[in-house]
Figure 1 (cartoon, rainbow, N blue to C red):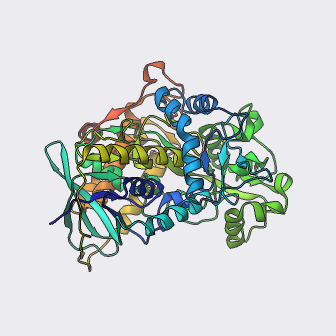
Figure 2: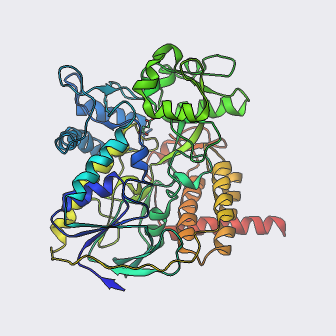
Length: 522
Ligand code: SIN
């Protein structure tokens, strides 16, 4: 065991980096599974950060759009607060050197994305916002002697004393063989969401619900785990993870067509391709199921400019042998963002003492059942700062030497076949389209896999998160936002509220599904 007075931050995406900088000069220890800058979902975010920067826009309109997209379960106070402070965060990132796109007058160039009533997304080099913001923050961090980063280490579980977190267990991220306990005065979980629990995802390979699962296993309260957002337009080119074709393309007028060249969104929603993301995702899913191979067509709207204005998209096209100037891009729905996660209050506090959460790992009430595009990075920034300030107020500052950590190697990452089985099961039964039979079947598979691999804490973090998603989805007998039940296709006003659940309750739902199957076969 290593004891430190550093604040431990688990994760290395935008929330983690921003919080570490906000905490400076207080000593911080960041736990990053990969080299800094690699492996975080934030770096893959193409769209940008939603903020009412234009004179014609307002935080009130931004909050109203957030509420509308969220399908009845957004916390209105949270939406108002986040929209109000968005501008400050953009100015702060600008002052730190983020090269946001500007026009000839110096005004921010704003992208339009689905369900926004205005062009409201600040961006960098078209589709490079996530990577560029990360680079800015990493450069600042390298100049911050208060922050120690341990790369190649994976947090596996939390140490608790009653309802208080007292430390984090870590192992080698490459070939874990044994764990070490880092005892610390405060832990901030900022390690991303759960997209990689699905076979079709836009998230980096390590983002598989581990941080959410770790907090759940320690007894923290979870919020809205059933609300998973599926992005309508990931590249359908056989890659895992599936590269993203940003929604900003549709904001520029790109259309969705079948392989026969027919547009289908105008028949589905008055906003057509710019309808809320859950609606577009379901339409794409339906076209794919009907064998119509949905495609994103940028030809008329962008022509050759797609190559220079969206370099990330152009690079993926080149790799896949698609010429977007003359060809439409095949697309599929992919797990993209987890609205649910560790229940976090306005200060980023979880229900456990000494444990804070921010970014996709947290659920603050901002996103409801369907996150408004580009509110994800914004929420990470807002709650990273809130958590850092709260930690600074509550934890006495002490000088701390760098932590010397040597993690034994030679072991194995979770069994790849078990992970594949888990991912196929969630996609088949806990994905875009859900029903009671499929959700119960998924819970039984998750329980079986967990029983077979229960000695691997990393795998148990994944199964804990998968259990929370499936159990809460089974309990929500209605359809709302990204949660679509074909056996309960309408929203039910009685469910127009957030879910609050602990893992023990999700396990009880899972056990009931197992008992039911045993009874049926006896
Ligand atoms: C996108 O660029 O389409 C994704 C933006 C987001 O998920 O917020």
